[in-house]
Image (cartoon, rainbow, N blue to C red; front, side, top):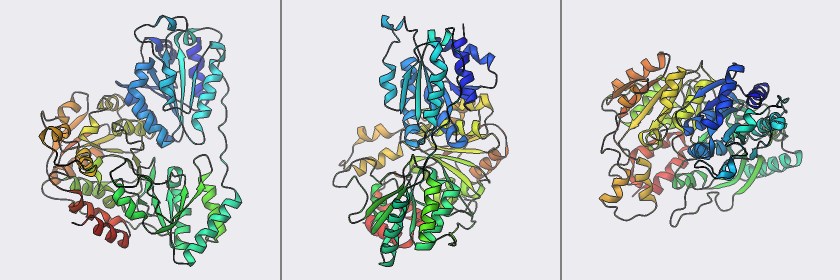
Length: 555
């Protein structure tokens, strides 16, 4: 009675998918039962579907291959949609398996019946409902192939219960993913010519790097181009995976705030996209442009997401004659240990002070993490995973998936208090899997980013009822008790010395740890244009850009 499900699991394993993040229900019981017949499939139980989908994303970012999810019917898919949206924006490979009622049962409009395929199309590049056991193996093989891309994407396979339990199924051979092609020679030559001419005429040029262009081999090729022509290396606001730290070419990430990003981009005459999208504002604001490419700047696409990024950059290096250029590298540097009352800035400083070699940093700190890039730029080499789709509640699940993919590397999750509450159930799965994740919760008792956005949209004189929508202090959240209730060791700190000591201990111990960092809100009572910490963050930008932005934000 599990032949279909067993064939599915064996097809997944043959295709290299050996991890499944699950939240099963009745319709998926045959899949669950088949796990005993396929012990090499690691099944990670989650208590909420948003944890399963976010963890599968984190796994794919670090393993460079897909994990699977197992969700229960349309309602389970609905609970996981936000982090599937983030995974789609991250362009990661993910095989999303959604159980469905038996085919003869679906027409009865039972309480849990819904249109799963319509919901799945919002986040999936490929959606299919398995029709019969005999073709289930080929359905699974195609789902994995599509998910692998290029580019990586979400492939959703809807699995009716009777197909899962039916006879006549057999595993299918894996289908190799498509091989990406590099940029064609004519395109490379045209971009090289445009950059040469602009540089010779004193124009300002930049490469905007995203996706796989932010990994080490591609960064070094981009660094050669930057050194040869004197152009800037920019990075996407929220990278899928950015390799950074001492000994690597530094990348100036575009700011989340359009006001800042527009100054970073001002004056550019040539902007080359490398596995990146054109820069845009996250939201529309009164009197502000949505497209951020400056007037008079020519956009070029060197490598699209479905093309070979490294080969395209190498071709551009050759076309420019930059093979001998030595890329500028980030020198090693660590800030000193912070002291005094704890603030978000001091948390970021302590992270830079202690971050170990090979760490994986998941950044969903929101407003509290603004200074993190500057304080960790010269730290030992590490990976940064960011909130690609902007749907909060990704940080803790992403960290879980990264830890499952890389059990020998410490994972540090920096998460705002509001974002943490979306998917706090990830802590339970971390404890169950003994994952080495250190979760730092910035508890400023507010949705700080929304206090900022209220200013930016031009809302006039918000009153107490409006401001109450961003207040998380009544009642106060107790993350220590919440974590301990799910089996995770936790402590609360409110001084820089205590935080630094707690972080050092947590990084040195196996298994999950949580540190609740009690910090004041970065935006409490302040206006965007006079935030001193915002200007201090500009140390990672070129001095002319920093000065221009300071003038723009000054009163």
